[in-house]
Length: 238
Image (cartoon, rainbow, N blue to C red; front, top):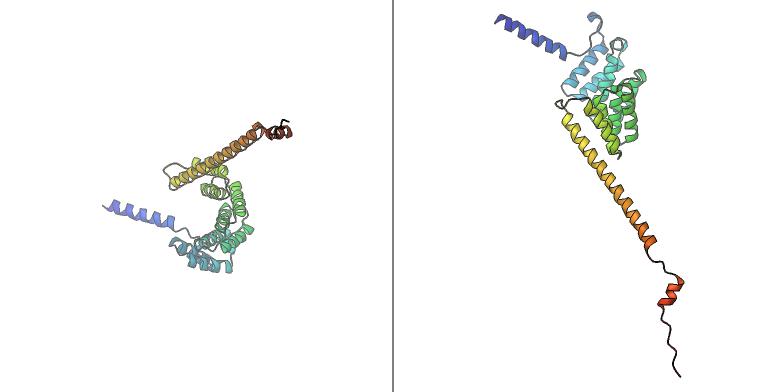
């Protein structure tokens, strides 16, 4: 019984350790305001409170960021703030935050993905696609970005490109993983739209060919035909 209790305590401690992702300073006695604000922002995000998360992340950025920069928490601050802004549909602000982060961390695929998603929601599909392509050039294993790229290509009417993006995403995840069913549905819709597009093109081509054939096959009206078709008056016998 004692062993079971000890094991249960160890399991609970392990779970808490995983959930407690907020950064700790290299020396715990040297925690500063930026670290505390960052931790509060992460905690707010974990309980689905994006408004307070943004407030705490802003406080962190307004403080001395030397220590959180050393632990990459500064990068996570920009990621977390832009994500929280997206949750509140503050898409222009999310793009600004992502750009601020990218000025320091130009090769961060997550910031680029957040930026691409914000552009997508604003209807700016070209800039959205550019951000997703940048993210995938840095990290081509991000299935979420492949799916997002498929979404924007679908909106742009590039169904073949969308099919390729969704197929890549599905190739990297197993069928029982969360979200795979949703990607499968999106792939089917893109395939159906592409097939319809091809069918329309075929119909248009056949109609054009039919019109050309009809034009060249029909009997042309000439001056001679006109004269033959007009009946000349008969001369009266004297």
